[in-house]
Image (cartoon, rainbow, N blue to C red; front, side, top):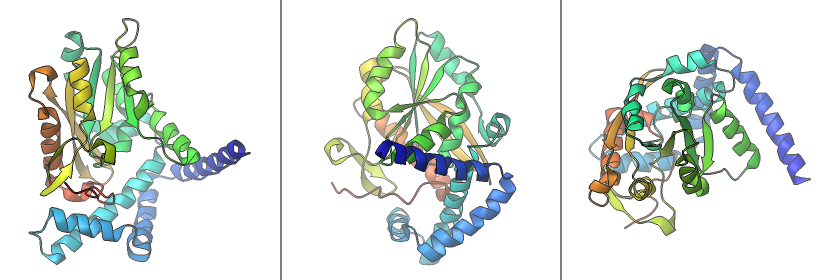
Length: 297
């Protein structure tokens, strides 16, 4: 009975999302402006968390400056919602035009050097969901595997997996990462790019590394580094820019192709510093709604 209920909820969710995804994106941005009023002004969705995060990260700004940044963020967050809905109906060509990878060719030398798996780290910046169009950018050279934490709602989890895999990417639950890396290492398996959203808060059991991030002591995920060192995998950082409404670019930046030669925590520190620079360049594009600093050292 529960499985039937979840299937029914998914079908209804998908129908609503799909119908809205058929609308022109210009119309969806009008809807985004309505969402902004609902989410920010009427409901005040996580406004206290956002305000606290901005105060901690930008104590040098005046209250009015932080308020303007807060409003810009909620406008961007509303755009993120409708853009993610649009994934259910956007064409591959339009997605690649709106979420542009500048330098896909930089993975080729790494593959030619014999690496079967590459690690890509990025943050909740811009619209990370729109980079699900990555696979075709590599001309069939490698698979794209998105590492994710399954959602509690099986209906929403199924919906997001559908959106994220429309253009050939694969979703790999966190618990299966090592198994997938081992599979990729086999001679008969194609090379793969493993994508980690690396700015999430670690669980209490995984508070292994702390650093300064946006002016505060911050627990940082070091799982990508541990996997890179254990299996000798190159690590790439995705530097995302919000160019204009509905247009994003990303540059791949090689952190290292020899992780075992780096001091302990160097990789984690390096991608944290680069992520910080990405955010500070245009803070409104980051996801300020999550409780990034809920743990204290």
